[in-house]
Every structure is written in structure tokens, then in C-alpha cells.
Length: 569
Image (tube, rainbow, N blue to C red; front, side):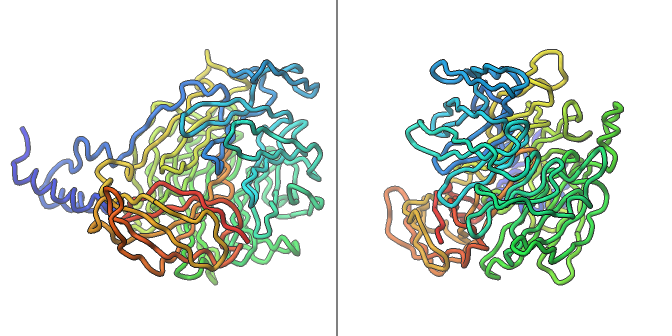
């Protein structure tokens, strides 16, 4: 038996009223409607499905499992694995083979272990990488070159450089012994001077710089956070703070490092309750910086992980529940403290992605166990949406689930069109497709968040003109259109630095909410209404290290497609 007509009418009015707002607002409206009408359910049918997002399979077999992933300014995605797994499912182009006596599986290897995905066609191109990239790290330089550092075996001290191109001819350039120390499970952060700091790694209790090192510098903090026989401080979380120092989180502790003088200038309260870094593998994000305070306030969020001792229990055949907690701390406060809240369920190996709406997507992973081969069960198939500005009790939403488990060695990144690309998952030694609980995964998916639903199209901006290069502290013009002029309000302009992602760690992910000095209602442009905005660029290279960013125009919580812009010193 259906609802009375007046109930449906009221429901539709409420939905139309709140759809342009973020999901958290819709949830609050639904709760109020439920209370008033005594209904058992608020969202139904197409509306509920749209707000939960949707999944699309883009590539049935990418050939190479995406242990590492990053978006390039050429609108392609680099994905790569380790080189010594044995055969992938994609041959190198032109019948090429590489000979590597250090390779533990194939000394003569004719298979690709890296690919480039063309986002315009979903076509996969094999790339040739020689030194072993297993559990390596990466970052982009100011000119758009991607730098991969470290790895395993003959790749431990290697630096690899990939220069994105449009003619599909670019490939890896490799520098052997370019690092002072082997860097396996290390993390990278691009710095204001266009250097990359490389921190940690297995038995690497130090840091150095790339692509040209000045030698390793001891960091006792990494000794102090190392757990014997477990570690739990690998792939430390790094965030460049507003004073130019680097926030480093490892295991359950964190510091602020002045890397120029090798001094710890601040020690933060311990985050209790478990371990957050590999192999316990929680995840971290620096919440968006704002022009309101000249990008000075810095807040870090860390979610998931595993209890202390979980890795040993997994080795004994037990899979402890992952951590369910998230913690936030404003590291620039005079007396910072961790503020705790719970996710809808526990999660380990979850990736955290900043969306153009300034919400956080938590995706991939499992509910029990740790990172490692065969070390997790009970996959987390449903992403969570987290709205930092919402009331505490309504910050999380559970989203549409995927049928594909994404466990150890899975990755996820934001795309220019607002979708989230998801790949990888291989908790096996080598490529295994039979007789294992979770086969090696070569499928590549895209998750479309709620804001891509067609019901938002009347409020979705489209960027029509943008200077491709800007300096610091300058006013630049952004032209955009909407379907109708009366749908423009609450417009925001956001710069997004795409991260390099591996092992639940999104390195160099950064979002800045810019200040618009003027938004003028321009002339009609084709089928839409044109607008011209004058926007102020970031004030310094500390706020936004030089490099390529995506600019999003966000109108009433509905983002445009991102446009590439280079921030130059």
C-alpha cells in the first residue's frame, strides 16, 4: 500500500529543497521528515540510489595490479606493481624483454609491471620499469614530472622519473643508487623549494631529499615508534604545515620536524587505542586549508588502523577487529588535542580522499586483520562519506557498495571529473587467481559520488576559461557557466593537489579553498549563463608548493569538472 498523495508531495518538496546541499543536510531533513510523518523510510528509489553514488567497471583486465597509483597533468593515470612477482597479464610493447639478474622470479622478463591509463578512452598502455618498485613512494615536482623513490631489492636506492606526455611515447627514466639509503615503505612530501623529503622505510630511521640526495639525516623519532617484530611505523603520514615544517605521524605518535635544521620543534599528544601505520595501516588526510585565515589553520584527521599486537595475532590465525575510531587534531592550536569519533564500522587499509566538496571519502580495506599477505578478512565493500563541518552525530554516511573486495595493495584517487578511480588488491605472493580467498585483482573501477547525479546538473558549473599558470598572491580570472543565472550562489574555488597513493597512504594530497574577490554575472554563453570570477591565488609556496593542481568551481556544493592549473614561484 502506497503513501497518501500529500505525503509523497511533501516528500518530493523536501528532497528538491535539500538536494543541492551536501548529503549531511539531506540526512537531517530526512530525519525531521521521519519524525513528523512517522515513516519507516525517507529516501526511496532513484533518489536514494543517486545519493549513495554508483560504481562503474572501466577496465576488465588492466594487466597489472595497481599497487601504486597517481594522476598526471596529462589526464592519464600511472599504475604500477613490483617487478619481481613473475608474469603479469600484459606483455611489454614490441616484443621487448628486460634482463635482470636481481629479479627473484624472472631473470628474463617480457611482462609489463607498470601501465598508463588514458582517461579519455580507458585504454591501457604498457610501460617499462626496471628497478623494483615494490612498496616505493612518490611525489610530483613543480614542472609536472613524477618522481618515484625507493622500493625493494635493486630498487631500494633508485629514483625513477616519469614525464607525462600527450603523444603516448613517454616512459620511465631510472637512476640507480640515487638515494643515500634503501627506502622500502618510506613516505614523501613535496617541499616549498621543490625538493622532496623522503622519510623512513624499513630499517631506515632517517630522512633525505630527492631527486638529488644530500645524504641521510638521522631521525630518532623513527626508532622510538618502531615496534620489534611488527614495526607499525612504516609509510609514516606526512603533512606540510603552515609554518613550513613537516608533521610526521608514526604508529601512535607525532612530531613537527624542522627539516632544515633537523630539529623536532613540537611533540603532540599520543593518539591512543592502537597503531595507525603499516602494517596496521590506518589512513590520514590534512583537511582543506582556507584563505579565510591565509591557510594558517592546519587540521589533521586519521582514521582506522589495528589494535597493538594485531599483526602477531594474524600470524597465529586470528583476525582482530580493525579500529573504528577517527581522530582529528588542529596541529596549529596552542594546546592541540585529539578529538575522537567513530566510523560506522571498523576499517583497516582504507584510503582517504578529499572530494571537491571538501568532504572526505573513506574507501577500500577490510574490517578485520592488518595489511600483509593473507592478513585481512571481511572486506569493507561500502565507502563512507565524512562531512567535517557537520554536527558530530551526522558526519558519516554509508555509501553504495562495490562487489569487488579491495584489500592489501589496493589504491584509489580522485579524477578531474569528480569520480574516484579504484584499482589493485593483491594479498597474494604473485598473481594468483585460483584457490585463494581473495584473488589478484586486475579490474579497474570508478565510483561516482552523489554530486555527479543528474539532478544536480542545473547547479553544476562548467569552467570555460582559465589561465593555465598563476603565481603567488595574485588575482586571476576564472570564467564559468551555469544552465541558468538564477542558480548561482555560495560559489567556492578550490585547488586540489592530486596525491600519489599506495598502501593506504595518499602522499601530498592537499586542498585549498581560495578567496574570490569578485563574481560578475556575465553574458549568455550558448545554452548557459556566463560568469567571471576574480580569485586570489595562494599567498606562498608553503601554502601551495609549486606544481600542477586541479581547480574546481563549486556552486552550492556541486562541483565543476576540474581544470589543470600550474602554480609557479
